[in-house]
Amino acid sequence: MTVTLGTRGTAWSPETRLYSDGVVIGADGGPLVVPPHSGLRRLPGTGYLDPSSGELPGAAVPTSDDVDAARAALAAAELPGRGTPYAAMAEHALVDIGVLTFPNGAVVAAGSPYWRYVWPRDAGYMAAALVLAGQPDLAFSQLSYVAAMQESDGTWQARYLPDGTRAVPDDRGLQLDGIGWTLWASWVLASSAGGTPSGRERLAELAPMIRAAVTAALDALDPRTALPKASQDFWEMDVEEAVLGSAAPLLLGLRSGRDLLRRLGSDGTGVGLSEDGVLSEDGVLSERAADAATRLADAVRSGFGAHGYARRISGSGGRDASIAFLLPPFAPHDAEVEQAWRAAVADTTVANGGVRPGEEWTDLETAWTPQMSLHAMTAASIGDAALAHRLLSWLDLRRSRLGALPEKVTAAGRPAAVAPLGLTGATVLIALAALDGRALPVPLP
Image 1: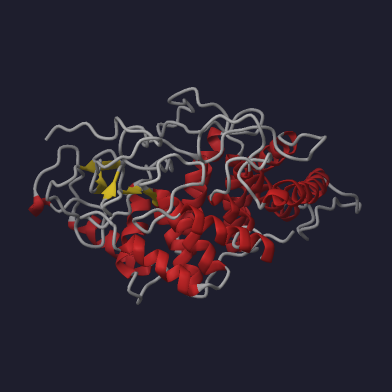
Image 2: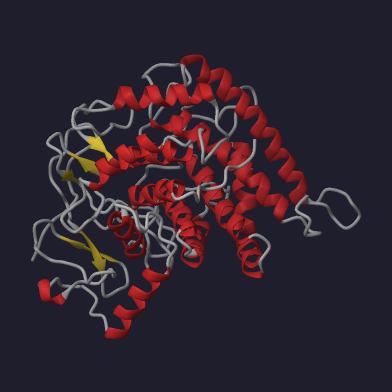
């Protein structure tokens, strides 16, 4: 079976093709795409191909012990949504994140070409979801891979190859939000482990990355405005002004980095004091991060808030999904921000019931599941269970034949583009955990 998947279509033209029904574990330990409409299945409770459903060149051939181990790991997981109508969606999402993770820790956005790369943004969300699911070792492995990709100035490129070479597939360049998402995911992992020996060891291994990332976040801010320099955000489009999709993740990263650096305090008290009571280097950097976070929060409120939290600092283009980055679980609740977020959800809803990324997104027909699941996560995190259930039910009904959450949904309500998309699966799991009463912690302002 020879197919070419994920090689055409853009964000500006409605996409109606489904590139894959899902992924299975390949012989190399990485994800192998299951072509759409193939009739192939996975062995229940695992990421392995069910050989009774047909052949797929390159698929791993598991032993009975492999299958038993995979099913035991899933049973032992703290699966969000277990015992609810969303249990099957949650199970598939968690297994898919595992399949999308290579043995070296590289977790790719999806299995298809052009998505088979490591985005720090997507990896951060998947690591946070794994922490909630009781799989911190895999989360740490993913974050360690991202840390190894870090540039010398503490930033990250948009995406990297999963082969450990630190090579990038194109010239998209730096995306500042990767700093924020990586620091946040590291903070989630550190917060879950507390002061346990394993938690301290993980934090120590991530410490060089954390220090460099916090420094990069400080350098990314314009000293005159306290806002970040122009950078691509999750839209991955060049802009010439500050956008909320970069500012909000950097604010989250500074707050997360501030707390991580305090945990690295030399005396173990978490305040960053040296033996003689003077602030250590980590303590000084933590204080700088705290000050910058305060100034950035004020700039976001006065700048973006003046235009109803539009995507662009100029107020043009309307709102987008990045308003959610200013609400739980990323930031303390704010009534004004919530009002703007609800307006953004309403104003970006398309005819099929889903949402598009933002008001200035030119495709008015196709729904994007990462934004849909992000809004579900926000609703669950602020206590609006009714809205969270509505959004999650919509996603659940639009999974692929193999149960994978796709990247897009067509005007006719069919799954389209890549499936699964790890970012959507991760935010679904985080939303379900919040509904379970296990919401992610929120960094303090």
